[in-house]
Length: 486
Ligand SMILES: Cc1cc2nc3c(=O)[nH]c(=O)nc-3n(C[C@H](O)[C@H](O)[C@H](O)COP(=O)(O)OP(=O)(O)OC[C@H]3O[C@@H](n4cnc5c(N)ncnc54)[C@H](O)[C@@H]3O)c2cc1C
Ligand SMILES: NC(=O)c1ccc[n+]([C@@H]2O[C@H](COP(=O)([O-])OP(=O)(O)OC[C@H]3O[C@@H](n4cnc5c(N)ncnc54)[C@H](O)[C@@H]3O)[C@@H](O)[C@H]2O)c1
Image 1 (cartoon, protein in one colour):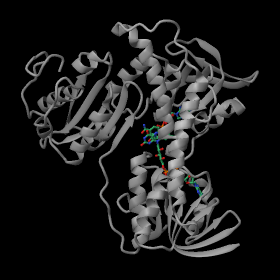
Image 2: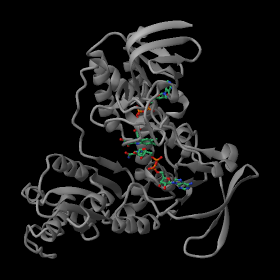
Image 3: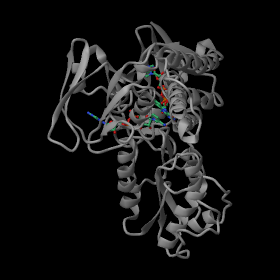
Image 4: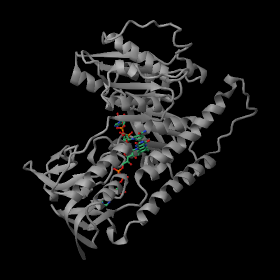
């Protein structure tokens, strides 16, 4: 057994771990980063990047199918070659992974250890059975893994998760997808647009990150024009029959029990943090729902008696906001503090921004509707705009969606937004920047809006909100002063 003594040990070489490494290195060379799986990060290998590559293929197929509505007729049958689609996804994904691996290999070999780390004591880690590390400070950046609920395990070897599908060589004929969350919606819609028969089963009525009941209802109806989605499914049985997955469920809106067969059961029912396999008890940390208690401005964990511990947490492992930019930020904060310990610094956190790359896209910015309801209760107002008659959205034949924006009564501060609409990733950035700048709705309306752009839909929603906040005049619904369709 090799024994090592270091100032800082980082568990996990994903996006959070790599960011922690760079920040800690500014303070010390006595550092190790431990990786138990393949290098390359979840984001590049089986997350953000292959997900968006699959979506890009699906959007192309969708545009070709829709072309005749613009008078552009593509002769003959549209053929989607699953092998070619998946070959491009894997090839481009491998490029992204190689870039990450190159940057990992730039790190001094002495500072990298391969193997699965567990806590042996508050300051001691055991890596497989080959290395014991005595670390003054530890950063937990172990990420998360796909959940596999027990009742889905009846699908046997036909049960797959998002960790598997980006290695597929071909597209299947059909998929039963459980969990219409962020991963489920992105992957499920993409597969459906690529010609795979998809049926999505949810629980409790949830669809992606949407909490606003009006947006939720709109999204539910809209997605159901494209594929089967039951966000509150009554699933009676899952079985493996003749090497196919058989799902028995009650058809939505009826008492009718149906049994359907699929090639695969895709479980996208969430991603619990990778804490369980760490023997975290040995670290004697205060825990809350299976995750160490931590301060989100310093990413520092606590001892069981509430005193600060020389342990930090970052990325999906913290189970706070499992998003790439948050993993990088948390890694930087955790690594910096682990490096400078005990001189801990609190760091600024950005406004919440989440984009789901479906079509229409879903975005939540700042506070969600349910957070506004909870924290501002009867001291907030809502503005709304539909994309159905919005000029640019109609031009592109993407005029579906609803935007709801929230503001604080009295101060007129912009609080947040939930949006289901065309290409709203850009608009969501604008809103997040306004939110972080603590702008009022009036100040936001003083900003330029170009014509004809999707952002004009935002202006309508903000005007509606300003009226509801009693900070602006009633808006004229069909006024032409800002150009047609704005
Ligand atoms: C399909 C999909 C699509 C996504 N799309 C987006 C998107 O579009 N935008 C976005 O912002 N986010 C997206 N995400 C989320 C984003 O990928 C994650 O938030 C981010 O990658 C988390 O980074 P991390 O460093 O916390 O975890 P990881 O990158 O998973 O790193 C954790 C590392 O720790 C290692 N590890 C775990 N336990 C141990 C141990 N005991 N010892 C040693 N090593 C260990 C693991 O092997 C892993 O390499 C997506 C996720 C998925 C699954
Ligand atoms: N575009 C992006 O930024 C992006 C893309 C993918 C993932 N991510 C991140 O990854 C995280 C994890 O994504 P996820 O989709 O795995 O989790 P999620 O929490 O977003 O969704 C899980 C869904 O599964 C449902 N569910 C739970 N148990 C179920 C069951 N037994 N049957 C049917 N449905 C069930 C839940 O109601 C929920 O809708 C997200 O929270 C997100 O932060 C981000």
